[in-house]
Amino acid sequence: MSTGAGLVLAVVVAGLCAAVTMTAAALRARQLGVVAVVDVAWGLGFVLVAVVSAAVGSLVDGADARRWLVALLVAAWGLRLAWHVRSRAAAGGGHEDPRYEQLLGGPLREVGMASAVRRVFAVQGLAQWFVALPVAVGAVLGTDWWWVAAVGVAVWAVGLVFEAVGDQQLRRFRARPREERPSVMDQGLWGWTRHPNYFGDACVWWGLWLVAALAAGWLPGLLTVLCPVAMTVFLRNVTGAKLLEKTMSQREGWDEYADRVPLFFPRPPRH
Image (cartoon, rainbow, N blue to C red; front, side, top):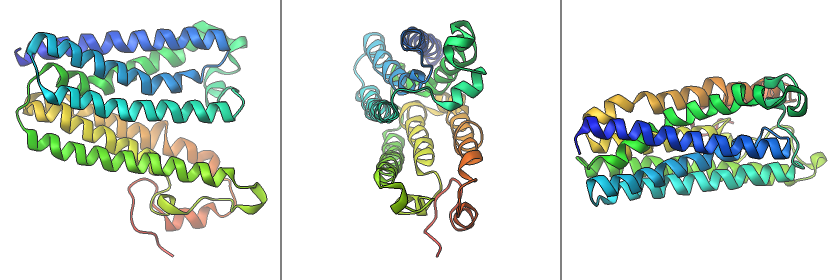
């Protein structure tokens, strides 16, 4: 398949998968009355894009182990994330995430589904489509540079370790009785960066860009490089670290913690 035809096919496949995912999430949100189900659909949607794209790529362009490698990497990340978010929501009693109530201006039963679709599901679907483009592109094109794919797997692995281990360390911290734990979590990876899970997420998507897009050639890599850039900017400056710190910074001891530990990119702990 030519690069041009592959890019067009990738855009269409990613768009259809994102639309199906967010439609299903919106229907489930209407049933439960909770918009936060979109966070579970976020990880699952990327898995759908990766698997469907790999299947389509195999049909139109023959066998290529890299496209199924990409699908495997995305599935490992996306399923873990969906399970983690679902478990966290269950522990919280299935209540609405305050972020979404603030975004919508009230609970779903008051603002209505039309507002939720416009402000949450459509926006997240568009973001999912854009971020997933390297995955979709890599699945419908052949492999030019396997060594780039190997580097990408290593970057992806570093990111998954930061994300999974950081989540596990925070879960153990929160499980301790409130009176026995410090006001700020600064142990383990949280002593290297204030947001190891968001940093890990960014590394995962840079690794996937390397494996999926750049390994398929310089043109698909160049055309999709803004996808991991956008993901990193949002994780650090928009919906991730900076947004969370608006509330976290009110905790006792936060200023001292922020002086010692960097916001995003990790470094060895300072005492």
